[in-house]
Image (cartoon, rainbow, N blue to C red; front, top):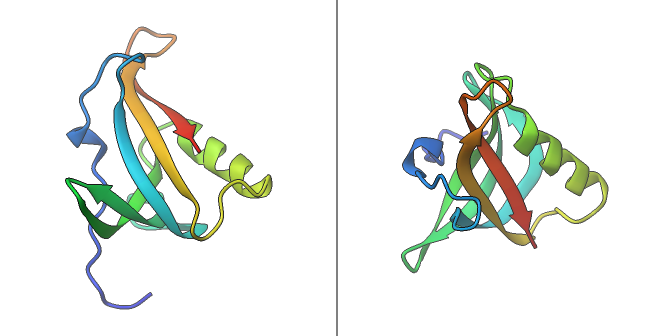
Length: 111
């Protein structure tokens, strides 16, 4: 990778706790292949918010977390050919509860 400074999408910026009214992240895939960084497994996307588009890294799984649901969904959809370079999709996300009654981030992909 080059020395360009690309920002990461920060999950902490998304606060919805309502599955029926989740936060929506509109992206276009730049490179569907996950890569490791110091803290997470990521992919490069273009994110559209407030009418502007910017390249960002989308964290699929933090190395500190056992929550691999987004990474699993991403990998399955890449294998099925639904996610590839140029694919546009919406990631819906909200904070739900785990089996242990702790907060856990949930995701849905909308094509």
